[in-house]
Length: 72
Image (cartoon, rainbow, N blue to C red):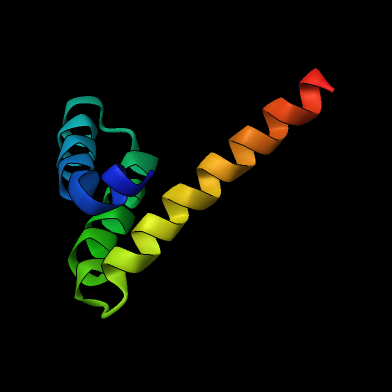
């Protein structure tokens, strides 16, 4: 999650844009717009790195707790 937020947002928006032009499926354009806005404005936030790392830690903790609950 952290790697995605820190490094892959612009690539995801570009991939969605190309996929939209290839398929002409309208919801892909809206997804592209959201990811493009997120990739432009999110890194400008002062707490960008900290929030990306915390999102990764939170996701890892949720996965770990879910697996622990399943095995119990």
